Length: 442
Ligand code: URA
Image (cartoon, rainbow, N blue to C red; front, side):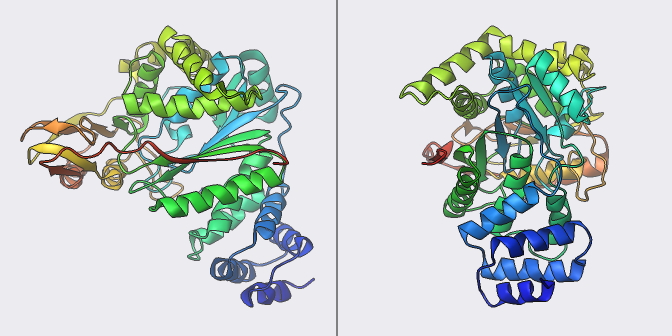
């Protein structure tokens, strides 16, 4: 086979065979195909798209490009979750301990934040000592002993995706639905899950701005998963305003800990129970008609009794983290400067622009513009008022946690533009727009 033939075939809008896709992915991963040819091929895929069969073949080739985690020695039937990235999204920190506390073991590999979207690993690292880099043996050992592990991706997992993603980043080929779907799903498939819950965010603080686009992306990922023999559920969830109140690493860990003690914002609670409910139902292979409601009620009880909190504490301790910070979240890193942003108008809050909040947090140092940037665990934004709240002029909308005056000033300026006020009460914002499911063979 020749790379030029495969590039030309896709350029002309023809469908590639399974063998051609595998050959190209393998060749690029092994440095046998140069960046310039892979870039041309990615642009052809971006412009011409891919059929479902091609997308599944691309995903499978990337998933099989490195090691694949086999969790079967420690988990009979592994259930995983993935969020496409949002603002204030600390759902994994709450849901995983709850699901594990319900007796369904979970092994999740998370990522770091990039751009405006935060990453679970950065959040966890605000707990002193917490080890995110575990070997495969350690992952197995954690699951066996504690029924939960939350760590970074082992280096050998889906190396083709890492290489292709880096090239997409610099060739204008990131926003392609088959490339996004195959990138996300290749990592999930390689991580050993039998069933996957996808939390596909849509809105101002998400990758996708329109519900129709999010639905198409979700459907492609669900089809890939089902085609690869996985049980799939995708939730299309709102990301127009931040989830919960806290945006920033230690601030989000604090909110997650409070939530696990039964004391957190209603939107975060409902979101976590829905995602967790689907995970529990899938993990138990219980598809009875009341299974989802029952699973959510069970998780809520574990939240209110503190059992989810104790599972989180056990996970932190076993991964080397300082549990004093879990017992007293006041001991988590704290910023040196605080600033408040008051409401410039009175009325009902009809919008809190999640992207502006995320950009403010990024400027404060909570996120990274480049992959190699360090993050400041202490800084971020607390959103006090959400869509639907009634406020008076001067009520505090945001508290900024900063470590320098310059970024504090810039965050203040951005956040002043984030809320929209109206005299009429808005319709409640939906939390979920749709649920897309697929069963193996169904
Ligand atoms: N997240 C991924 O892992 N890959 C993409 O292409 C986009 C978001």
